[in-house]
Length: 261
Image (cartoon, rainbow, N blue to C red; front, top):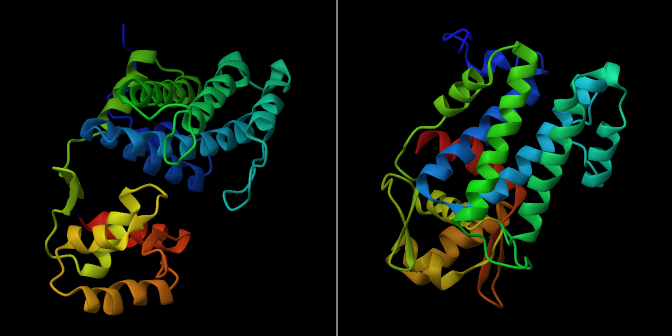
């Protein structure tokens, strides 16, 4: 029987973790859940890799009392998972010490080996891979909640399910092209959002021009792409006519654009 508190929120359920970790977990996890609703298979894997990197820090904190800063590179992810497994039994329950690190390593490996978000995987990302990533993310979050709140597993799952909501996609994939549904966005913001949706892939200038339906190619190159490049929000190679989002551009999308679309 379910015995959990129905008023418990996912944020409150994770309160044993530092606030920056909780904030990052909630943002990435909610993105994964919504992308699952929208069928964004490639994007799910990319975000799942990010979630694995945050959740390993959560385990570090819970089992050792300290964790790698979010601003620091984790280094060898497999080694970090193995370090968690080496913690003493007194540090915490087996679910956190043994099972979750192995689940996170599989989640991270799935992201790298199934062509999620980059070229070079053995096979293209597909629905089964994406749904596997979602269920692994669900299980890991549920295990954190179950242990920290001492509630039934089904109550933890209800909290996880409640975070997803069907929403209007920011970018619509239709007939081999992309469209920004919020017509109030400037061409500059449309380009950033379109590049963000491509998950670290370079996009031809011609496609960006066509997808935004800008009326004048020369002006589009001068007023939009060139200025974004100068601001270091994108890298635009004029010789090969390709553009890719920079880390600064990704942050611009996540902080300023996505919350308002």
